[in-house]
Length: 380
Image 1 (cartoon, helix red, strand yellow):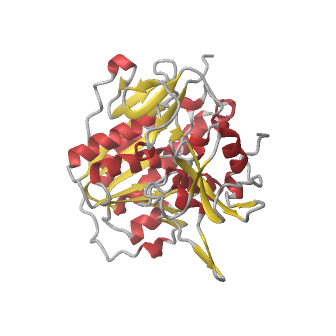
Image 2: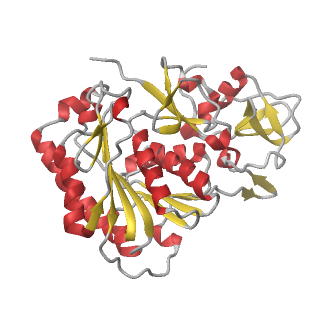
Image 3: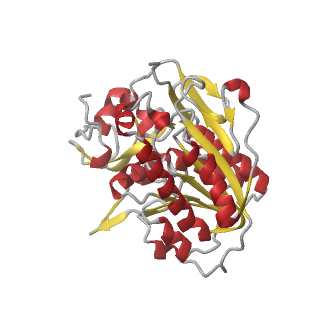
């Protein structure tokens, strides 16, 4: 069996700084690497300069950008990434929206499985776009609370996972025709539950990482016929790159493209949407909404670690201490640091100009404010 490829997607709002590689044909910031570096020991990853993502998975972002251009709105866009963990598609959507709309967009990144939300929160924080809101809600909640609200819904739904067989032994072991049938039914339920939240004329981008027609073309066709939509034509510009055209979308198969398996298609909602009600973000009980604020503790104002990762972080708000690789890794390992030349108080630790987080310099030592959930576990 062939070895899985390695690819990254650069963050254009953090200097597009990351390992060099060949361009991904359908992603302007995607790069296919010749070998797998030690991502854990690259501080730029921890600064949110790039995201490690399969090149085939980036095709969903391509379909999203295509529909974004077709809609033609350059502001006020409302987008839902419905099944978002661990955050690859959310960060891709965030970059695409910011390039197209500036500050004038709203992206809700949702993951119903609580066990997976932690990774999503961390990756959204690292990417650093304050327009992203993270929630953990059942799809039906959006249909009930936000009727007709979203311009685009991206649903990368749980599937039978055939596209992951090359790199995931567990996916191979757990696959069966019964699993395909179960997944197809669950996918229909997810689409039906969230459908009221999409406005009339809005776009559903639907994707899986399986090759099963029952979960791909058949389900999108079902959504168009039963829920009320018009199928959008598949992409035909990447056939030479190994991207197949199916009845309702595009299929990328491991071995035919550099990455793993992915299917993606889209449709426009033609059914009337319920009337839009007044919307209060707090009704969604967000786990994260924008970049967290500093916390006052007595006379001390403690910066939140995510402030340093924000794409709009003001370098003049705290002293920025440029450190070498080993010191950066010790910070990310959450070791105690000594910075004799740094001013006392709160300092932002930077590597090659990229902020990583904060320390409080006490003079003889520094309190390390790097979050425990994000610390490097390997010896550095």
